[in-house]
Length: 195
Image (tube, rainbow, N blue to C red; front, side):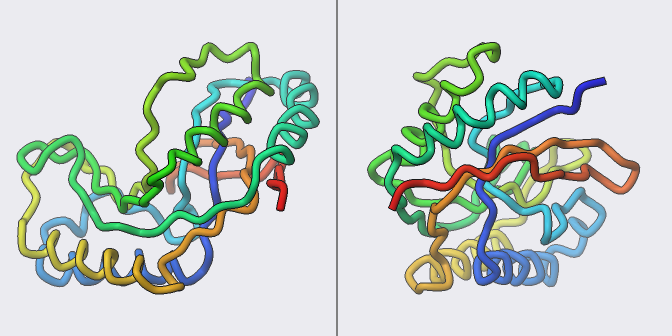
């Protein structure tokens, strides 16, 4: 069976450390969230697009097109801006660390990369909310305001420093295989942006 694939940004170590610290801070005051499905530090990333199941032939054909499309886009930076509950404070399915992208450069990158995958039905007008998924809840629940505010403040403060910057220099095509311990990601193609 072909693997499920997605395009994502990998995160620098400083950003990963910040997000792990935010998780620790949140859990210190909201221990009831410990049993939720927290994303392991090595798996933290910014998803640009889910592609679904792609066979080897589709990946082989797309790889050079993806590399070419990325090379025409200039590098840029995103900054951590906070932590938000999704879809709402009263019915949380996920907590996201958000990223500022005032010029919508990430959406432009996504749209350019998606031209490499014509077989995937894709709506270029679909909005992109840059984020890193920190946790998925096992069932919808309320968020505890104090711990959320503390975690969000930590992430927002980091975004004002160099350690809270995601320098977008490449995008990666990953495959995802679901294991009993969680998803396992494999890097397939790294497409470097132009300088």
